[in-house]
Image (cartoon, rainbow, N blue to C red; front, side, top):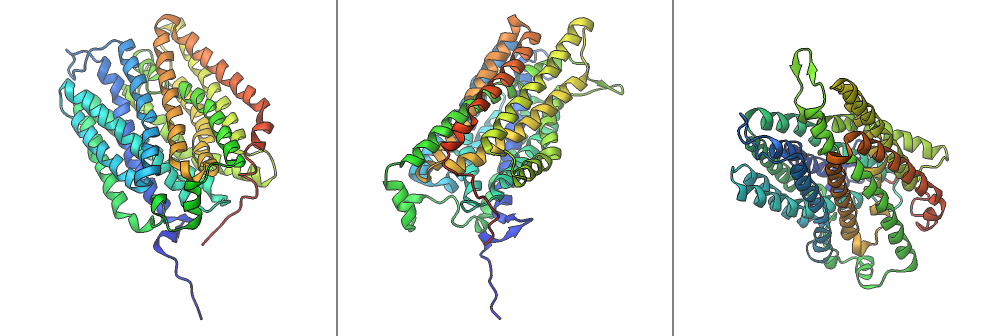
Length: 452
Protein backbone atom coordinates (compact mmCIF):
# COMPACT_ATOMS: atom_id res chain seq x y z
CA UNK A 1 0.00 0.00 0.00
CA UNK A 2 1.42 3.37 -1.10
CA UNK A 3 0.90 6.51 0.98
CA UNK A 4 1.57 10.12 0.11
CA UNK A 5 3.54 12.17 2.60
CA UNK A 6 3.04 15.92 2.36
CA UNK A 7 6.04 18.21 2.41
CA UNK A 8 6.22 20.46 5.46
CA UNK A 9 5.14 23.53 3.49
CA UNK A 10 2.11 21.66 2.11
CA UNK A 11 0.77 20.43 5.46
CA UNK A 12 -2.60 21.80 6.47
CA UNK A 13 -4.17 22.98 9.71
CA UNK A 14 -7.91 23.65 9.91
CA UNK A 15 -8.17 23.33 6.14
CA UNK A 16 -5.40 25.82 5.30
CA UNK A 17 -1.61 25.53 4.73
CA UNK A 18 0.38 25.63 7.98
CA UNK A 19 2.41 28.43 6.42
CA UNK A 20 -0.65 30.68 6.74
CA UNK A 21 -0.38 30.51 10.52
CA UNK A 22 3.34 31.33 10.44
CA UNK A 23 2.47 34.47 8.50
CA UNK A 24 -0.56 35.00 10.79
CA UNK A 25 1.58 35.20 13.95
CA UNK A 26 4.35 37.23 12.31
CA UNK A 27 1.86 39.82 11.18
CA UNK A 28 0.07 39.67 14.53
CA UNK A 29 3.23 40.78 16.35
CA UNK A 30 4.07 43.36 13.69
CA UNK A 31 0.60 44.87 13.99
CA UNK A 32 0.83 44.67 17.81
CA UNK A 33 3.90 46.87 17.66
CA UNK A 34 2.50 49.25 15.02
CA UNK A 35 -1.00 49.71 16.42
CA UNK A 36 0.29 49.87 19.97
CA UNK A 37 2.50 52.78 19.00
CA UNK A 38 -0.32 54.33 16.94
CA UNK A 39 -2.75 54.15 19.86
CA UNK A 40 -0.56 56.41 22.00
CA UNK A 41 1.17 58.55 19.35
CA UNK A 42 -1.41 61.35 19.07
CA UNK A 43 -2.10 61.25 22.83
CA UNK A 44 1.65 61.55 23.52
CA UNK A 45 1.92 64.49 21.14
CA UNK A 46 -0.96 66.49 22.68
CA UNK A 47 -0.23 65.78 26.37
CA UNK A 48 1.20 68.81 28.16
CA UNK A 49 4.91 68.83 28.97
CA UNK A 50 4.01 69.58 32.61
CA UNK A 51 1.67 66.60 32.93
CA UNK A 52 2.39 63.78 35.40
CA UNK A 53 3.16 61.68 32.32
CA UNK A 54 4.63 64.44 30.13
CA UNK A 55 4.13 64.54 26.39
CA UNK A 56 5.27 67.05 23.78
CA UNK A 57 2.52 69.62 24.35
CA UNK A 58 1.55 69.96 20.68
CA UNK A 59 -1.80 71.35 19.57
CA UNK A 60 -4.45 69.02 18.15
CA UNK A 61 -3.84 70.42 14.65
CA UNK A 62 -0.07 69.87 14.90
CA UNK A 63 -0.55 66.33 16.23
CA UNK A 64 -3.06 65.37 13.53
CA UNK A 65 -0.76 66.89 10.90
CA UNK A 66 2.15 64.66 11.93
CA UNK A 67 -0.18 61.68 12.32
CA UNK A 68 -1.41 62.15 8.75
CA UNK A 69 2.09 62.42 7.27
CA UNK A 70 3.44 59.53 9.32
CA UNK A 71 0.62 57.09 8.57
CA UNK A 72 0.75 58.06 4.88
CA UNK A 73 4.51 57.52 4.60
CA UNK A 74 4.32 54.20 6.45
CA UNK A 75 2.20 52.79 3.64
CA UNK A 76 3.64 54.73 0.67
CA UNK A 77 6.97 53.13 1.61
CA UNK A 78 5.37 49.86 0.47
CA UNK A 79 6.06 50.88 -3.15
CA UNK A 80 9.87 50.79 -2.86
CA UNK A 81 9.45 47.81 -0.54
CA UNK A 82 7.56 45.95 -3.27
CA UNK A 83 10.05 46.93 -5.99
CA UNK A 84 13.00 45.74 -3.90
CA UNK A 85 11.27 42.39 -3.33
CA UNK A 86 10.32 41.93 -7.02
CA UNK A 87 13.73 42.87 -8.40
CA UNK A 88 16.29 41.99 -5.75
CA UNK A 89 15.35 40.02 -2.64
CA UNK A 90 12.08 38.18 -3.05
CA UNK A 91 9.25 38.60 -0.55
CA UNK A 92 10.63 36.31 2.15
CA UNK A 93 13.97 38.10 2.61
CA UNK A 94 12.25 41.49 2.37
CA UNK A 95 10.01 40.53 5.30
CA UNK A 96 13.06 39.69 7.43
CA UNK A 97 14.76 43.00 6.57
CA UNK A 98 11.55 44.88 7.36
CA UNK A 99 11.15 43.15 10.72
CA UNK A 100 14.73 44.03 11.73
CA UNK A 101 14.16 47.70 10.81
CA UNK A 102 10.97 47.72 12.89
CA UNK A 103 12.69 46.28 15.96
CA UNK A 104 15.32 49.02 15.68
CA UNK A 105 12.71 51.75 15.13
CA UNK A 106 10.44 50.88 18.04
CA UNK A 107 13.46 50.46 20.34
CA UNK A 108 14.82 53.91 19.45
CA UNK A 109 11.40 55.46 20.25
CA UNK A 110 11.89 54.32 23.85
CA UNK A 111 14.65 56.94 24.19
CA UNK A 112 13.31 60.24 25.54
CA UNK A 113 14.95 62.58 23.03
CA UNK A 114 13.50 64.40 20.00
CA UNK A 115 16.21 63.04 17.69
CA UNK A 116 15.21 59.55 18.79
CA UNK A 117 11.54 60.31 18.18
CA UNK A 118 12.03 61.28 14.54
CA UNK A 119 14.72 58.66 13.89
CA UNK A 120 12.50 55.92 15.31
CA UNK A 121 9.59 56.98 13.12
CA UNK A 122 11.93 56.87 10.10
CA UNK A 123 13.00 53.29 10.84
CA UNK A 124 9.37 52.23 11.35
CA UNK A 125 8.34 53.79 8.03
CA UNK A 126 11.12 51.85 6.26
CA UNK A 127 10.37 48.62 8.12
CA UNK A 128 6.64 48.61 7.41
CA UNK A 129 7.41 49.44 3.76
CA UNK A 130 9.55 46.33 3.45
CA UNK A 131 7.39 43.96 5.49
CA UNK A 132 3.77 44.89 4.86
CA UNK A 133 3.31 44.34 1.10
CA UNK A 134 5.54 41.30 0.99
CA UNK A 135 4.07 39.26 3.81
CA UNK A 136 0.60 39.88 2.34
CA UNK A 137 1.76 38.72 -1.10
CA UNK A 138 3.18 35.58 0.51
CA UNK A 139 -0.29 34.70 1.81
CA UNK A 140 -1.56 34.63 -1.77
CA UNK A 141 1.43 32.48 -2.75
CA UNK A 142 0.25 29.71 -0.41
CA UNK A 143 -2.78 29.02 -2.63
CA UNK A 144 -2.85 27.73 -6.22
CA UNK A 145 -4.71 29.68 -8.89
CA UNK A 146 -8.49 29.17 -8.63
CA UNK A 147 -8.40 28.00 -4.99
CA UNK A 148 -11.58 29.30 -3.35
CA UNK A 149 -9.90 29.12 0.07
CA UNK A 150 -7.79 32.17 -0.77
CA UNK A 151 -10.35 34.78 0.37
CA UNK A 152 -10.96 32.93 3.65
CA UNK A 153 -7.21 32.56 4.07
CA UNK A 154 -6.81 36.32 3.87
CA UNK A 155 -9.63 36.76 6.39
CA UNK A 156 -7.84 34.40 8.81
CA UNK A 157 -4.63 36.38 8.21
CA UNK A 158 -6.59 39.58 8.82
CA UNK A 159 -7.88 38.24 12.13
CA UNK A 160 -4.23 37.73 13.13
CA UNK A 161 -3.57 41.38 12.29
CA UNK A 162 -6.40 42.44 14.53
CA UNK A 163 -5.60 40.18 17.47
CA UNK A 164 -2.33 42.09 17.54
CA UNK A 165 -4.13 45.42 17.19
CA UNK A 166 -6.67 44.54 19.88
CA UNK A 167 -4.11 43.44 22.47
CA UNK A 168 -1.75 46.31 21.71
CA UNK A 169 -4.38 49.02 22.15
CA UNK A 170 -5.12 47.64 25.62
CA UNK A 171 -1.61 46.72 26.74
CA UNK A 172 0.60 49.32 25.05
CA UNK A 173 -2.14 51.94 25.50
CA UNK A 174 -2.36 51.23 29.22
CA UNK A 175 1.42 51.09 29.75
CA UNK A 176 1.88 54.30 27.76
CA UNK A 177 -0.86 56.28 29.51
CA UNK A 178 -0.21 55.02 33.05
CA UNK A 179 3.51 54.23 33.31
CA UNK A 180 5.01 56.43 30.59
CA UNK A 181 4.77 56.92 26.84
CA UNK A 182 8.30 55.68 26.17
CA UNK A 183 7.70 52.45 28.09
CA UNK A 184 4.82 51.86 25.69
CA UNK A 185 7.06 52.50 22.67
CA UNK A 186 9.70 50.14 24.05
CA UNK A 187 7.17 47.37 24.68
CA UNK A 188 6.14 47.58 21.03
CA UNK A 189 9.76 46.91 20.03
CA UNK A 190 10.03 43.81 22.23
CA UNK A 191 6.91 42.33 20.64
CA UNK A 192 8.18 42.99 17.12
CA UNK A 193 11.28 41.00 18.02
CA UNK A 194 9.02 38.06 18.91
CA UNK A 195 7.44 38.31 15.47
CA UNK A 196 10.83 38.23 13.76
CA UNK A 197 12.01 35.17 15.72
CA UNK A 198 8.75 33.34 15.03
CA UNK A 199 9.01 34.00 11.26
CA UNK A 200 12.58 32.70 11.08
CA UNK A 201 11.70 29.54 13.04
CA UNK A 202 8.75 28.77 10.73
CA UNK A 203 10.69 28.76 7.45
CA UNK A 204 10.17 25.03 6.81
CA UNK A 205 6.47 25.73 6.27
CA UNK A 206 7.21 28.43 3.70
CA UNK A 207 9.50 26.55 1.32
CA UNK A 208 8.96 27.83 -2.22
CA UNK A 209 6.76 30.73 -1.05
CA UNK A 210 8.02 34.28 -1.43
CA UNK A 211 11.34 33.35 -3.07
CA UNK A 212 12.94 35.69 -5.63
CA UNK A 213 11.56 34.80 -9.07
CA UNK A 214 14.79 35.88 -10.73
CA UNK A 215 16.46 32.75 -9.34
CA UNK A 216 13.54 30.42 -10.07
CA UNK A 217 14.19 27.37 -12.24
CA UNK A 218 10.52 27.29 -13.26
CA UNK A 219 10.15 28.08 -16.97
CA UNK A 220 6.84 29.92 -16.49
CA UNK A 221 8.40 32.16 -13.81
CA UNK A 222 11.31 33.04 -16.07
CA UNK A 223 9.03 33.84 -19.01
CA UNK A 224 6.71 35.96 -16.85
CA UNK A 225 9.66 38.14 -15.78
CA UNK A 226 10.94 38.73 -19.34
CA UNK A 227 7.87 39.20 -21.55
CA UNK A 228 5.77 42.39 -21.66
CA UNK A 229 2.26 42.36 -20.20
CA UNK A 230 -0.47 40.99 -22.46
CA UNK A 231 -3.96 42.48 -22.98
CA UNK A 232 -5.59 40.49 -20.15
CA UNK A 233 -2.85 41.43 -17.67
CA UNK A 234 -3.08 45.11 -18.64
CA UNK A 235 -6.89 45.11 -18.18
CA UNK A 236 -6.53 43.50 -14.77
CA UNK A 237 -3.98 46.12 -13.70
CA UNK A 238 -6.46 48.83 -14.76
CA UNK A 239 -9.19 47.24 -12.62
CA UNK A 240 -6.85 47.07 -9.64
CA UNK A 241 -5.89 50.73 -9.98
CA UNK A 242 -9.56 51.76 -10.26
CA UNK A 243 -10.43 49.66 -7.21
CA UNK A 244 -7.71 51.53 -5.32
CA UNK A 245 -9.86 54.68 -5.57
CA UNK A 246 -12.32 52.97 -3.23
CA UNK A 247 -9.44 52.10 -0.91
CA UNK A 248 -8.34 55.76 -0.70
CA UNK A 249 -11.88 56.91 0.11
CA UNK A 250 -12.39 54.08 2.60
CA UNK A 251 -9.23 54.72 4.61
CA UNK A 252 -9.61 58.49 4.39
CA UNK A 253 -12.74 57.94 6.46
CA UNK A 254 -11.78 54.84 8.43
CA UNK A 255 -8.50 56.26 9.76
CA UNK A 256 -10.32 58.93 11.70
CA UNK A 257 -10.08 56.21 14.37
CA UNK A 258 -6.52 57.02 15.40
CA UNK A 259 -6.91 60.76 14.92
CA UNK A 260 -10.15 62.73 15.24
CA UNK A 261 -12.17 59.91 16.85
CA UNK A 262 -9.28 59.25 19.26
CA UNK A 263 -9.26 62.89 20.34
CA UNK A 264 -13.08 62.92 20.49
CA UNK A 265 -12.99 59.92 22.83
CA UNK A 266 -10.42 61.67 25.01
CA UNK A 267 -11.99 65.14 25.19
CA UNK A 268 -15.74 64.91 24.55
CA UNK A 269 -16.88 61.44 25.55
CA UNK A 270 -18.17 60.48 29.00
CA UNK A 271 -15.85 57.55 29.70
CA UNK A 272 -17.00 56.79 33.24
CA UNK A 273 -17.98 53.15 33.75
CA UNK A 274 -19.09 52.09 37.24
CA UNK A 275 -16.98 54.81 38.84
CA UNK A 276 -13.88 54.10 36.71
CA UNK A 277 -12.70 56.13 33.73
CA UNK A 278 -11.99 54.04 30.64
CA UNK A 279 -8.64 55.09 29.04
CA UNK A 280 -9.23 56.90 25.75
CA UNK A 281 -6.72 54.66 23.93
CA UNK A 282 -8.81 51.58 24.76
CA UNK A 283 -11.43 52.59 22.22
CA UNK A 284 -8.80 51.81 19.58
CA UNK A 285 -9.21 48.15 20.50
CA UNK A 286 -12.92 48.05 19.56
CA UNK A 287 -12.24 47.71 15.84
CA UNK A 288 -9.88 44.78 16.41
CA UNK A 289 -12.27 43.17 18.91
CA UNK A 290 -15.14 43.27 16.43
CA UNK A 291 -12.91 41.85 13.68
CA UNK A 292 -11.97 38.88 15.87
CA UNK A 293 -15.65 38.30 16.76
CA UNK A 294 -17.20 39.01 13.35
CA UNK A 295 -14.40 38.01 10.93
CA UNK A 296 -15.56 34.44 10.35
CA UNK A 297 -19.22 35.51 10.29
CA UNK A 298 -18.69 38.03 7.48
CA UNK A 299 -16.42 35.66 5.51
CA UNK A 300 -18.97 32.84 5.74
CA UNK A 301 -21.78 35.20 4.71
CA UNK A 302 -20.00 36.10 1.49
CA UNK A 303 -18.97 32.46 0.82
CA UNK A 304 -22.53 31.17 1.25
CA UNK A 305 -23.84 34.00 -0.92
CA UNK A 306 -21.45 32.98 -3.69
CA UNK A 307 -22.47 29.32 -3.40
CA UNK A 308 -26.11 30.41 -3.87
CA UNK A 309 -25.15 32.02 -7.16
CA UNK A 310 -25.67 35.59 -5.96
CA UNK A 311 -23.36 38.53 -6.61
CA UNK A 312 -20.26 38.11 -4.42
CA UNK A 313 -17.38 39.41 -6.52
CA UNK A 314 -14.53 41.19 -4.77
CA UNK A 315 -15.55 44.50 -6.32
CA UNK A 316 -19.13 44.11 -5.05
CA UNK A 317 -17.90 43.28 -1.55
CA UNK A 318 -15.70 46.38 -1.59
CA UNK A 319 -18.60 48.60 -2.64
CA UNK A 320 -20.82 47.21 0.12
CA UNK A 321 -17.99 47.58 2.65
CA UNK A 322 -17.50 51.25 1.76
CA UNK A 323 -21.21 52.01 2.15
CA UNK A 324 -21.52 50.18 5.50
CA UNK A 325 -18.42 51.93 6.87
CA UNK A 326 -19.78 55.31 5.76
CA UNK A 327 -23.06 54.58 7.51
CA UNK A 328 -21.11 54.10 10.76
CA UNK A 329 -20.21 57.79 10.78
CA UNK A 330 -23.87 58.66 11.26
CA UNK A 331 -23.42 57.42 14.84
CA UNK A 332 -20.62 59.96 15.26
CA UNK A 333 -23.03 62.59 13.92
CA UNK A 334 -25.43 61.55 16.70
CA UNK A 335 -22.59 61.70 19.25
CA UNK A 336 -21.65 65.26 18.31
CA UNK A 337 -25.30 66.32 18.34
CA UNK A 338 -25.63 64.92 21.87
CA UNK A 339 -22.46 66.71 22.97
CA UNK A 340 -23.62 70.02 21.56
CA UNK A 341 -26.94 69.74 23.38
CA UNK A 342 -25.73 68.37 26.74
CA UNK A 343 -21.96 68.95 26.94
CA UNK A 344 -21.12 65.23 26.86
CA UNK A 345 -21.71 62.21 24.65
CA UNK A 346 -22.20 58.56 25.53
CA UNK A 347 -19.63 55.85 24.88
CA UNK A 348 -22.13 53.67 23.01
CA UNK A 349 -22.02 55.99 19.98
CA UNK A 350 -18.32 55.21 19.56
CA UNK A 351 -18.98 51.49 20.05
CA UNK A 352 -21.68 51.46 17.37
CA UNK A 353 -19.54 53.50 14.97
CA UNK A 354 -16.60 51.13 15.37
CA UNK A 355 -18.84 48.10 14.87
CA UNK A 356 -20.16 49.41 11.52
CA UNK A 357 -16.64 50.43 10.51
CA UNK A 358 -15.49 46.90 11.24
CA UNK A 359 -18.18 45.15 9.20
CA UNK A 360 -17.32 47.50 6.34
CA UNK A 361 -13.62 46.82 6.75
CA UNK A 362 -14.11 43.05 6.71
CA UNK A 363 -15.96 43.35 3.41
CA UNK A 364 -13.26 45.53 1.83
CA UNK A 365 -9.78 45.22 3.31
CA UNK A 366 -8.94 41.46 3.37
CA UNK A 367 -10.93 41.10 0.14
CA UNK A 368 -8.75 43.79 -1.47
CA UNK A 369 -5.58 41.96 -0.42
CA UNK A 370 -6.85 38.72 -1.96
CA UNK A 371 -8.02 40.58 -5.09
CA UNK A 372 -4.52 41.97 -5.67
CA UNK A 373 -2.96 38.48 -5.55
CA UNK A 374 -5.57 37.20 -8.03
CA UNK A 375 -5.11 39.95 -10.61
CA UNK A 376 -1.52 41.21 -10.28
CA UNK A 377 0.96 39.97 -12.94
CA UNK A 378 3.65 37.71 -11.41
CA UNK A 379 6.51 40.07 -12.28
CA UNK A 380 4.79 42.92 -10.43
CA UNK A 381 3.19 40.96 -7.58
CA UNK A 382 4.84 42.81 -4.71
CA UNK A 383 4.78 46.17 -6.51
CA UNK A 384 0.99 45.97 -6.99
CA UNK A 385 0.59 45.01 -3.32
CA UNK A 386 2.85 47.95 -2.51
CA UNK A 387 0.61 50.24 -4.57
CA UNK A 388 -2.39 48.93 -2.64
CA UNK A 389 -0.79 49.84 0.68
CA UNK A 390 0.35 53.18 -0.75
CA UNK A 391 -3.29 53.99 -1.52
CA UNK A 392 -4.17 53.16 2.08
CA UNK A 393 -1.38 55.57 3.00
CA UNK A 394 -2.91 58.30 0.85
CA UNK A 395 -6.18 57.53 2.60
CA UNK A 396 -4.39 58.04 5.92
CA UNK A 397 -3.16 61.45 4.74
CA UNK A 398 -6.68 62.39 3.65
CA UNK A 399 -7.85 61.29 7.11
CA UNK A 400 -5.35 63.65 8.72
CA UNK A 401 -6.52 66.57 6.58
CA UNK A 402 -10.14 65.83 7.37
CA UNK A 403 -9.31 65.62 11.07
CA UNK A 404 -7.55 68.99 10.94
CA UNK A 405 -10.57 70.54 9.18
CA UNK A 406 -12.71 69.80 12.25
CA UNK A 407 -10.98 72.69 14.02
CA UNK A 408 -12.92 75.18 11.86
CA UNK A 409 -15.74 73.10 10.35
CA UNK A 410 -16.67 71.28 13.56
CA UNK A 411 -16.96 67.53 14.20
CA UNK A 412 -20.66 67.45 13.29
CA UNK A 413 -20.00 68.71 9.76
CA UNK A 414 -16.94 66.49 9.22
CA UNK A 415 -18.54 63.26 10.46
CA UNK A 416 -21.78 63.87 8.53
CA UNK A 417 -19.92 64.85 5.36
CA UNK A 418 -17.79 61.70 5.51
CA UNK A 419 -20.91 59.52 5.86
CA UNK A 420 -22.70 61.09 2.90
CA UNK A 421 -19.64 61.05 0.62
CA UNK A 422 -18.75 57.40 1.30
CA UNK A 423 -22.31 56.20 0.70
CA UNK A 424 -22.69 58.18 -2.54
CA UNK A 425 -19.24 57.20 -3.83
CA UNK A 426 -19.97 53.51 -3.20
CA UNK A 427 -23.26 53.75 -5.08
CA UNK A 428 -21.49 55.52 -7.98
CA UNK A 429 -18.90 52.73 -8.35
CA UNK A 430 -21.78 50.24 -8.22
CA UNK A 431 -23.14 51.72 -11.45
CA UNK A 432 -19.96 50.59 -13.25
CA UNK A 433 -19.67 47.19 -11.53
CA UNK A 434 -20.57 45.09 -14.59
CA UNK A 435 -18.04 46.86 -16.81
CA UNK A 436 -15.28 46.57 -14.21
CA UNK A 437 -15.95 42.84 -13.78
CA UNK A 438 -15.49 42.23 -17.52
CA UNK A 439 -11.99 43.73 -17.29
CA UNK A 440 -10.98 41.04 -14.76
CA UNK A 441 -11.37 38.44 -17.55
CA UNK A 442 -12.89 35.83 -15.25
CA UNK A 443 -10.12 35.94 -12.61
CA UNK A 444 -12.68 34.91 -9.96
CA UNK A 445 -14.70 32.48 -12.08
CA UNK A 446 -14.80 28.75 -11.32
CA UNK A 447 -13.14 29.03 -7.93
CA UNK A 448 -13.11 25.75 -6.01
CA UNK A 449 -11.28 24.11 -3.14
CA UNK A 450 -7.86 22.75 -4.05
CA UNK A 451 -5.88 20.47 -1.74
CA UNK A 452 -2.43 18.95 -2.22
